[in-house]
Image 1 (cartoon, rainbow, N blue to C red):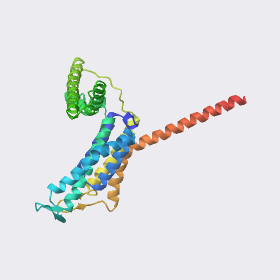
Image 2: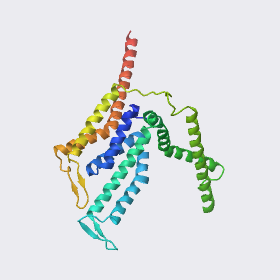
Image 3: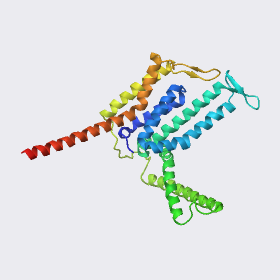
Image 4: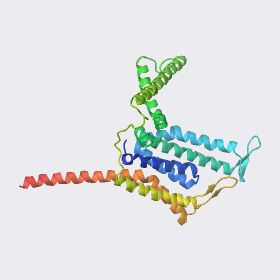
Length: 313
């Protein structure tokens, strides 16, 4: 599904995801991670729907979060608040548990934002931004970023074809299922290698990366993009300004120290700025949908009024 923010300039799309993912990874404040998680969920629902977002979170993100949250206190024993001792005598501390939960939330938020990134930043946008600067690397990165969704689609195509000839992984005994699975995987790997070679040869024949080569582009930086860039710079700048001045400071070793949770003007600046920055694509889409509905109502009312005038005349 193509949302409103996807129609903006690719530079703004890239800056948005760099900002959200960067702050999520490097700032471990629990409130900021919670804001990032809520904004990521909202944008993912907007792009992929409730069912796809719920499926991703339950089947992939949630188990990963649980594994990270449980493993961290088993191997990291820093902290001063001892809750108990493990079988080998190592302490089980509150700080390690909290830090494990924070790391799990950070991982979940990062996965969410990257799933949204793959929907918005298409390969043509990525090549448009970096094709002239790093032509070879941008081509490789664009192929890698679109590899997973393309790999999944081709996997379904191959599975459907094998099912029609009785070689699906759900058909036959355990040994036959394993053989069918290996056959499908082998076909998929062969297809991916051939597709990569064909893409590289095609781009080479077109002169990709050669000096003086021009490229067609439909992207133009207009006034709408300027206003959006100013808004992003303002909100993200406020967030960074407050974070640099210590209003979103957090530490989990050796003792939990979190500043900014008691709301102060500085913390409100950080949290409000990041919330406005993260929810910007969602608000854009909701606003455009409401405008579209209002325009449809206006057009319908004008048509009804025109018919009435015609009947009276």
